[in-house]
Length: 158
Image 1: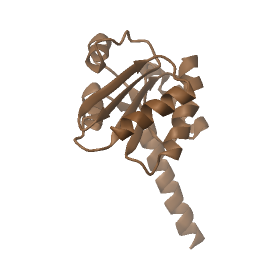
Image 2: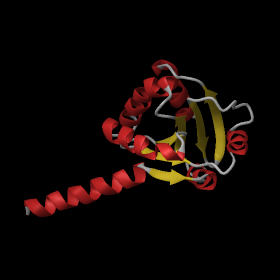
Image 3: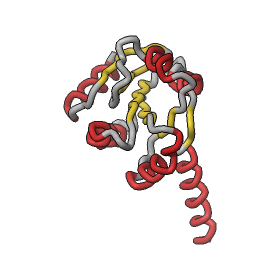
Image 4: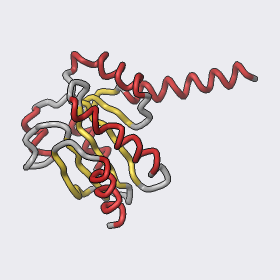
C-alpha cells in the first residue's frame, strides 16, 4: 500500500514539474488568459537574472497561497532565453513553485511586447491582469507587497 502511495506521489509531482518547465508561445499564452470566465488571471513576466523579479516573487507566491479559494490564478512567464531552460527548471525546483510557470519563446519579441500592452517598454518585471477574456490592468515595474495585494483585491471585487 505504501509503495502505491509513493508511486502516486511521484507521478503527480513529476507531472507538475513537467508543466512548470514547459515552453509557451504567444498564441498558447493568449489562449490561457483569454478564457471567458470569472477567474482573474495574474500573469507575471520575470527572469532568473532579474533581481527585482526575484525580490517580488515571494509576494505573488504568498498571495497565491492565501487566495487559493478565490477565483484567481497566478501564471509566471519566464523571459529567459531558450538556452537558459535548465536554469529556469532549477529555479522552479529550488523555489518549489506550485503555480504554472512557463518559459516564453516569442516568434517576434517586439510584436509580443506590443500585443501585451502598447505602453510596455519590454522591461521586467511586468504584470498583466485578465478576466472574462479582457485585459483589466497592466503594471510595469517591481511590486511592493502592499501594492500587489491591494491591486489584486481591488480587481477581485470588480
